[in-house]
Image (cartoon, rainbow, N blue to C red; front, side, top):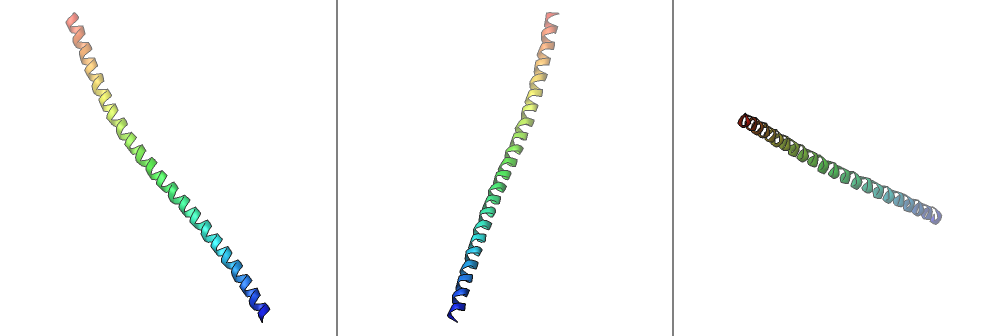
Length: 80
């Protein structure tokens, strides 16, 4: 009877160790996944911000090009 009890205790300890190991591994992968999701979200926000800046700079560039063309026309008209 005592032999069976000791075997059962050993088996339960092994099962507990395996269970703890699996929990630890699950938590590690879960934490890694959450970190990757945060990085992905941050990168997407940065991309959106950069797109907005690019559009703003394109508008400013177009305005400056128009001003330059207008002044060059004025300059050539004044020379004539």
